[in-house]
Image 1: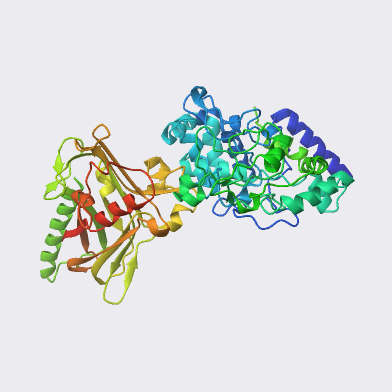
Image 2: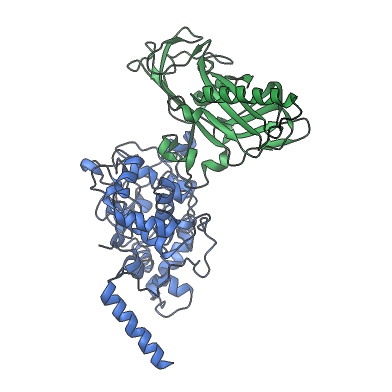
Length: 343
Length: 250
């Protein structure tokens, strides 16, 4: 038995060195999706899109492939970088082809299967339909589906991989989107210090400052940033002065004046990696963001009722809150080898 | 071309029927075949893209460069039963003759007297994730920023348009008060008898000028672009809801 194991191990080592398989995923590491303990059921459960290792790998390849843009310069991963929790490092707004700038901050991507809508305005309601928007947007990737399909068809990697995943070599938009959804849906971040704390696991010991911060959060922030995903995925006007582009937010989708300047509530997870903050990236630091809630609320007819008087926080409470927010950073997520670009 | 083919088939069939009078000849066999074809017209004229000017009910001149619409959930009705086409999604594209004819498969052998369908894509398929075939977003009929299908699209020119003589009507919206989904039911001019070996085509006409006519006359000067869900889109949908008629059955 033991001998067998050693033999198998040696085989594996040989395999690794001889065939140079995908270095990020060891052969025995399977791609499976599971709902973290205590979390609600996700909205998207890979219905009609059987999750597989090959499908995930294909999605990852597509996610980091610049050929999805008109001039082959921008990939999904350009504005959604793994080390930035899949937001764009140091960019207030997204940076697309021909150095064009969007009007909104690239949102961090994780726990997407729990979202019931996508984008700051919630204009898209299915994860498989999400990538079409940045692909076709003239200030993002500005590419046509037929061109992408033609580019992918000329690459043997893709013919082989689409066949492995879908049974034949056909490349069409549906398959591209399903593969991307497999990769994006697998981006689950649930191993922050906070997660260990609530699961009573090792590494979850909170300091008294962090615990104070947790209590302040639960009292003053949790109505919108609800545990465990740290968002209720609603649209709210959080009192920002309208941006230079006068982005109307949710109202652009609903055409309802009651939705003017409302944006989807972002998660508070992984904030350490995903600065700057807000839908237009106007705040570079979390202190700036907290100061907005204590003293920067701009009154307007659609201002969220919960923010009519801002949020009262003492200097100490702010420090405690920042300490707690720091426990929501998931180092293992941003460093997860499965989620990095494979050269 | 397709029409000619169907016509030929019809002739063949007639020939077969005549033979049937001869007791020695075999009855026509094989599964029944029913196709539905759409002929886009402008009033009494055929609709020709890019070159012909038409006059709408408001007296405005219109030239069309792109004209597409979805037909879905096709149903044939008999007195006591219904045939529902499976995966019933068709994009009628004036530029593509093949798109204007489709076959209804596996029809039970009965006599039908009505055809009904939806103009547009039912709400469920607007939010069901990545689709293919007629519903592939590659056809330019899917909004990526405010998710949902463009149910019908007309683009072209009009000297009455204040925006450089261009018109662009993208009719979308699948829910709520501004849903543009319309159901059309048409009586067949004669009973459609589906039986073994029968071959039929239901020939529909769709009058583009109805977009601008009843119940609400559209002035191109006032409405030259529709690019959002809302009352303008709904107005066009209510107008084109009655543009279909069954011209004849082959």
